[in-house]
Image (cartoon, rainbow, N blue to C red; front, side):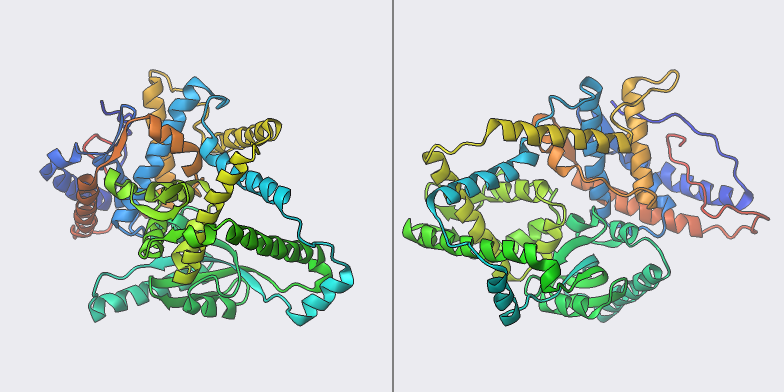
Length: 486
């Protein structure tokens, strides 16, 4: 069953009428397509028509498959959360294990390592100052980026058009437009686009050399362009750290202690023979980068079960990586997209080591502290409630004559319209909907994504076709009417 919002009447000026009639002509010619479903979730449906209507209004928003897919994923998430909130507005039954498990695992590993190794971590301030002066830590920067991809084997004209778009985005960002909104609209790196392109802080050696060179050359607030092996980047530096010893003493002490602990960890792993038995698949780094580019893409059973890391007693598959990408910090996918192959291999090796350590901790009887887990869960539920309250889907009040399902459909569509218009920042919900997606039937139809792209192309062309005389006070954005009368 489809749930359409109620009709909204519009008064059109002459020029707007012409655009609307041209659009209706295209819609009428494709009536069967207009009824096509783009996404389904728990008995609710998002139609091609509804997304076409959103995108046709936003000429500045690229008409690209990843944009349509991202909007569809947001709709699935918000629909499932809204249905969950209808039954349990405090989210007391919501499974937060995917969100909490990474932290619980890390604390378990820390407890195990502390129980079996005792490295020398007693360091005076004088010792630390001598170490600082010998090898002072380099600067780190925090940056946002918009990744513009190239077609496979692009023509010179196609490559030039991407460069022109990059220059336009730099100019718009420098003129004061929201970089977060631009990233959400244009970046093909959907992993970072949902958080405004934010990559967090990074130091030398963590990203592609070309990207790092450009980022470290920019001052805070400046915007620039860099070309890497994954595409063209529009970069904005938002913060920079140039630490002094006095200001960084506490953090530096922690980093030195951590380095000694890691060194001891490596010795322990070598002693138990795990180092030589952790095998990272030859193609794992490239697969990891591709998954980070689009961490919500559903995969077939065979693709999801593909092993990337093997270690004593188990393996780590593509599906495990997808869970990691959707439950770890929000800037992780963006950083992995830009990481070198060596850095990705080291990241994958560390995952294998962590799995070995968790198994050892279990064998030693070191299980998570129940009180600690309860504390983490309570804090997480409070955060979920606040976020869903901000989205307006925790407690949806139906309008007069409106059913609860119709109210939910109205609210989720309104959120999508605001996201597509750039008036609402995306609240990432990946980590809290992992369980909901596993327990509920949902789908996003590739054929409907393609149909949406084709229809929007037709509609955008239709709005430019009429040569009517300009009205005295035409609206700045032509009104678009879909076949449902919205």
